[in-house]
Amino acid sequence: MRAFRSFSLPSLNVLSLVAALGIVSLPFAAHAETVTGTGSLIMKDAYGTQTKWGRSLVLPEKGKVVRVMYGSYGFSILDMEGNTVGDYLVPEHAVGQELAAGEYSIVPYVCAKHRHHHVEVTVEY
Image (cartoon, rainbow, N blue to C red):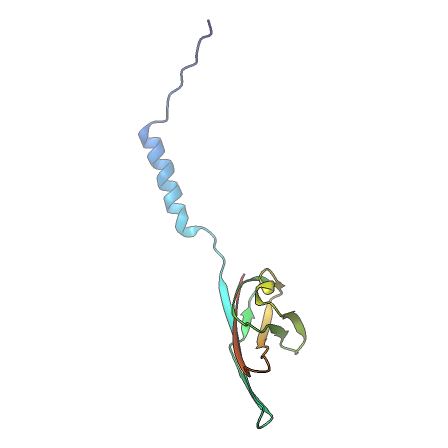
């Protein structure tokens, strides 16, 4: 016959201490920050003009695109020198794109029929 080893469970006080330490450390857990940039564009064909506005995407450190809202006809991400960082005909394809620290502008594409559009891009860093 085999003898079974006996073991004892930690006392309730030890378990309480471990749980308390876990709960106390939760507020100090690291979490990522997010920032959202926007871009809007209206084309006025009758006058040959356009109006653009939006909020720059400013990254204090390297980040990754985690969400794109709207942008049905696609959009571009441009750095502050005007260089294209990414062109996306399908907005969801931008999700996962890594961006270096810096400032970017978001420029939506417009279709031939609907001459205005808006896009929002959220990056986690």
